Image (cartoon, rainbow, N blue to C red; front, side):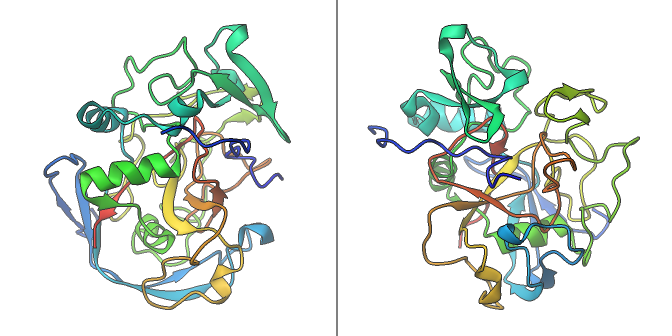
Length: 314
């Protein structure tokens, strides 16, 4: 399995120019219009307790973590949410500045002249000129009917810039995992340990990856952010649908030295953490649609299956 099977890295080059647990859900306020789940903080067991993960992902050792209280978006940031930010600021994403982004091969909507090469080691990812958050499949696509879908083709840098405008921040990966678990210790998924392939609980791949998606759940790519069922904290789709950027630098050995209280990740690195898996996850090659699963990518990389949600600023 490639380290970037789920999220292709942007090629090196010059930088661009420029609930059941009675969780309190609070209404949106100010610029950021997503409802919040107020989480009390506390201790939980972090990491892979089932032996499902790859050693290179660093999901072990399992360890206890204590977190301060925080609030978190009940959904990923949507296309409509991101459009408000762009309309207010004129911000241009990394994908727009670089002039291309990575699109899954079955979702490409572009002229042949706009299609670039496949990603090394992951031929299902194709660089498409003009692919960006407004054009998720390429220049021949748009956001018609997708206002309530998660925004995609967002780099870590793009997500952080939104957070600064909204007076929010990206979650640490410890906060993300605590929120995804919904107060339930040890389960693989937000709903338990098993995946029902007749009654899908999340948006992942059905069929034979990467050529045939039966779309049994109704979606080739993203689904609306309030699809399926929320977890016990009232959060929707923390696993599947889109990968979500976290604040932390990635280090597969970090858990061996992680602080026990409010860990914030290593002081530096090359890639930032991604959590939750996406609509492309499938057990035949990537089972990272789990609470404990970790992945990473460079901060300027963007792709059609990565977005973010935010937490309260400290």
